[in-house]
Image 1 (cartoon, rainbow, N blue to C red):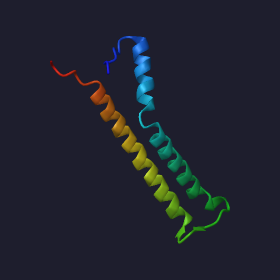
Image 2: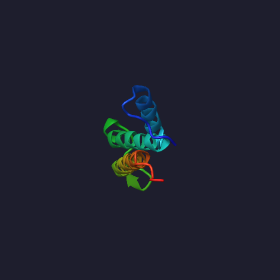
Image 3: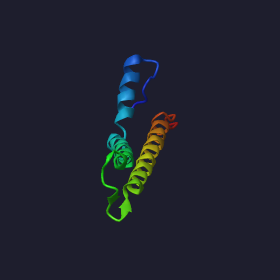
Image 4: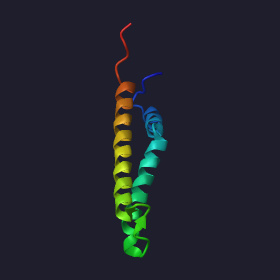
Length: 93
């Protein structure tokens, strides 16, 4: 894989598209968990049910919110590691 020249606008745009595609599904999963968790935190205040299974609705909301942020932070660190590996100097021949 060739190293992109980040001074060239076309190669920089292609590399940004490549970097945005890294772990895209995980990123959307984390965002979805955060949105659902926030919804579960606010739903009982809007007249929804107070219990969902054995736990109150707020416990499920906080758990999904925390899980979503863990996924998002994991994706950020994975993308950073990918970028560092991709931009590492080529091995000397």
